[in-house]
Image (cartoon, rainbow, N blue to C red; front, side, top):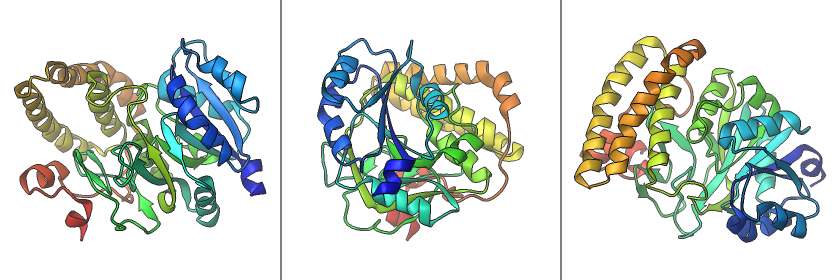
Length: 337
């Protein structure tokens, strides 16, 4: 498809990910529809750069002088590269034939949408959805993210329930296509987040600009997860908690923010106690470290506040943890059908 070749840039963020590059890069090239492919390297110390140079002459490499994390690395690259659409994809994602085409067609056909994600399946268990994105992301009243296909830690099998294109609240950073214009108009990724939940914050701000976020079942990829931080890593727990609080501070109207933060303090205290009972000591402390960091960032983020009062797609007035833990509703379709 000539339009994809001219208008789409595939951007792959990498940090010491030569294992994943060897596993996935050839299929990304094969099914790229001849789109430009750029690897953004965050100062890797492994063989990533030499491997790319030896095996993929067509790939453009942007080598950063240090590890800028997810947010800043993508911001710098997207501002620099001349392209109308960017496919952001993790190095630990395995793609399928023609995976770009449905994403591109979706955005071309639906002008009110700024970004769209594919169906994201588990690379280790290919009949199940993957935690980070599944069939599209949403948040509840307290700002807790969940997905079609994943509530809490409960992952659904793909039984054909989410086979319709639709609006969602957030696209997974593992793989999504976005219009450069809308990315820049929303301010790009918040670089203070460093990594984790920056895509949710971005999608919220995009919706504040009266654009929509989409999901299409016509494209499918497989995400292995843990390419940078493994599941259960205390740093992942820290960034997810801290950044979620910062996102709420930026985007919620004042009254909602006060109510939500009071509730979140109670809920996160209970979660930390649960970590302690399970002897997950690092995760126990990571939650309190997240709140400590949140307080440090408070003056800076108060200046960033641009509350979004308009109703947006995919933000539900429910308490997902209550439904999941107390009412035992662990499937998306059981909550919303």
